[in-house]
Figure 1: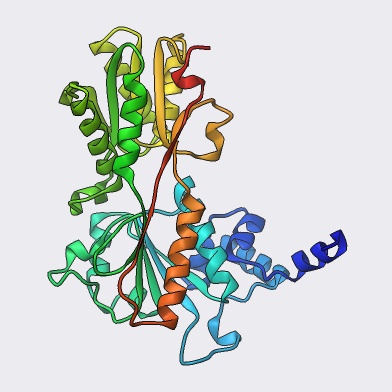
Figure 2: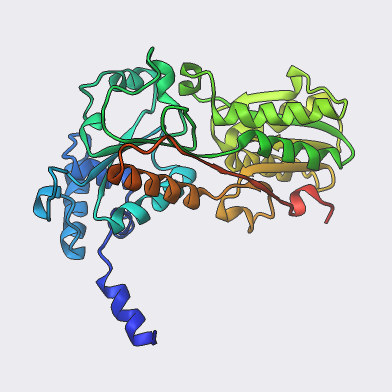
Length: 346
């Protein structure tokens, strides 16, 4: 295809919710709230988003386009948060597939245990679109029958359930890869576990699986990870800063730190720089997620194919809409270790 044909094809691509968010300078969640006429949007922001939607020709209303078979052409996405790098990337993968089938996304962030209660009732709006994609938490844990209160197709992403299609990462494997790498280095080993408020409502979480795999691999090598060497924090760089301060009270450099998320590992880097400690020599830190910015910061990380995982979940949902009687399917993704100078001497 010549460059002219490529340019024409690009022009014909229908604008997506991501395009609107980028052009308006807001998050995807804000655009979703405008589309769903949420009162939690300031008038000025609403006007700006609506103006961008009109300029781009974005049509969010399913009744304004072709409707077939009684469908709304809207899919609910339940996710812990909006606005974090991981979920922006995951939504990008989901929307790429669903947008090609002319489906819109309606975002429903859980945010807190109190808000979670809203989604334990079958009357919740999220259960009345054409289908659901549930991210990171297996909500079936909250229902005695082990199924969500809806007859609509459901797909789990970044989580797994025996009752539904699931596209998920082997987080325990990621923890084991992290342990194997840090065990190759001299010095004491520490870990930072992320614990959000919502985690307490579920028995299985991705962050717990990462640390669980890490502990398991250490045990196999004859090393125990004492509780005093595991720092628990919210998902923030500040948590990594405080963690390193605590670790340095227990051991002298060199020390090796596994942070269960890249943004927390970034805080470790920042604190090491502040204290004048050499990264890769006196302080070694390994993150998890493989965020794009880790390359510039030379952060070693356990990478995961976030966008690919989102795309796989969306394809599963589309197939489920077409063939409701398919048995539940599992798509397991493996993480991989990307070593940079944060765990190697300069």
